[in-house]
View 1 (cartoon, rainbow, N blue to C red):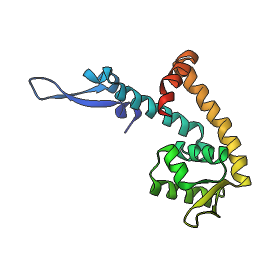
View 2 (view 1 turned 180 degrees about the horizontal axis):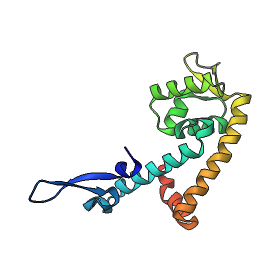
View 3 (view 1 turned 135 degrees about the horizontal axis):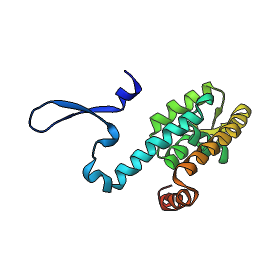
Length: 164
């Protein structure tokens, strides 16, 4: 399928049942235009795609970056604390930490106070990698600013601050 074919959709014409191809940008979304959730979700899709494209060479996804950043800023946090702070399901975080540990970016150290939990730390390699990831993430943020403007980006961050 060509890129232009991927950009098109089928839509029934009233009356004769025939279908015609139209560009997806021409498809009306009716009341969705006024729904904040729809707009936020569409923006999130764009944000994630740009983040993944910008950090693609280092193979880091947005959630992995968030986990590494929180661990880097708070060495020794428990898995439960990271999961709660970032709103990640515990089972998903365990899987994510397994992959980061396999890449030698994170290490789990058994807690001295609670044998059931682990303290999370970046490895030396993880600290070096996170510094690079942060530089690339800053480039991604410049893409966001270029797309929506500096003032709008700052305003958006202010609006969303209550949710972070």
